Length: 473
Length: 95
Image 1 (cartoon, rainbow over the protein chains, first blue to last red):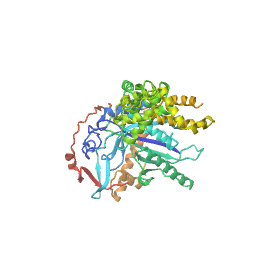
Image 2 (image 1 turned 90 degrees about the horizontal axis):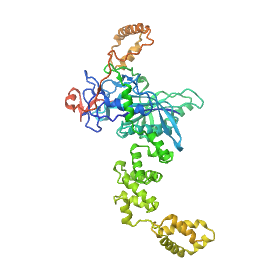
Image 3 (image 1 turned 180 degrees about the vertical axis):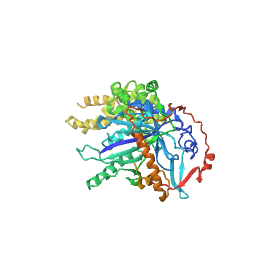
Image 4 (image 1 turned 60 degrees about the vertical axis):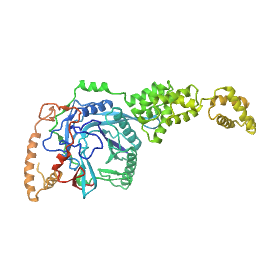
């Protein structure tokens, strides 16, 4: 299976790419569509500086050449949500040239995926097909929203790689703060080109393109469906038709979108309304200096400087927000990096998921979580009690020290007290003690459990283990 | 290069133009004439000449990212044959 992806990322500018109308999501229909967006006669598009800036950031982040001169072209087709009859895009001279992205696969394996190009273009409006007196309703608020279309090389060989690549780009554009990544609102949309070729064959097979996927899960399903569909055709000795297909979420299948006689014939030509976009070295270098630490750099730093595993570092750098939170936790935890990583990826992420809370709205701050981890590392509480403390912090009962104090959760490290409890437990279970002494070593777990229960989980587990062994000799 | 009837029909379709069957031979002749002119230009040796993106020798000016366009929906929709709930209405299109 050979896959290439085209990703459309809506750039997070305040205004359209060629007009000064707002791009804010969710406005009343057509209240953010000005004369330029409507394609009225006599208007002139003027390029948004910030859109160029954002595209430049992306190009530098993937080590691509940012074009000193890029050119806008008209891509001609008719559809009611494209009032001009053409989309302004870039064709022969895109703003971003060849680059590459490292993706993370299972078991810490990485792979480089080539990026062919990335170009600036305008988004179309929206067609609403609900029944408006047997007609379609057109909302042009989205028309003219800047898009960066990121085109990959056909380097992808499986659904898992496609998802890893798409997630990496999704994370990167958010790191760079050039796209909000909101897939429900359509800020990040993916087209997948898929073809099959028999093992050993050099040239690619005929491809089908699945357009407009807005979730990683649907993308995975669409690829699986399309693989089977093409496989059946080829095994029956048939030919795959080059066409655009749509993934039907309800039916879980792809279906043909445009009939063959209307095969795309876009007749690109340079847009006479726009001059070439020229960027000098000084500008490009100044943008390079603004780049934040990128996901891969951060990941490698987490591995080499913080001693995390490649897997943990990959998960924690999946989003800039999570990485920032983790670093704050690790710092507040006094360098207990591994423990901090476990808590952020484990209990903390699970709690966010369970309550459907975003990281920004988390009731447990990084300082609170880090402070609690300190109490684990200085033996004030055990890892088990920590879960109880975490839940209390999560439900707003204060920071770790307050919860520990109020709940009397301090770990029992007084050997005398632990010994007394152990004596009681052994006295209450003479038969098991006898069996243990006779060599049934696995009963140690039973005794540890009983002692922990008697201490309400507060006895220091390693001390319990040691003293139990001594007493049961 | 001489255009066939089918070429003319395809071009008209792409441009969403309804043309008279009877007018097709005339269009074919006119358009073929234009293509012959282009073919003459094709004969010129352009090796080493940088493609011209725009005849005007200048760079694109950039606009600051500030919202200055206000909502003019009422005004702009006076042009539209049919609107409803703020939407432009067009003949139904479904893919």
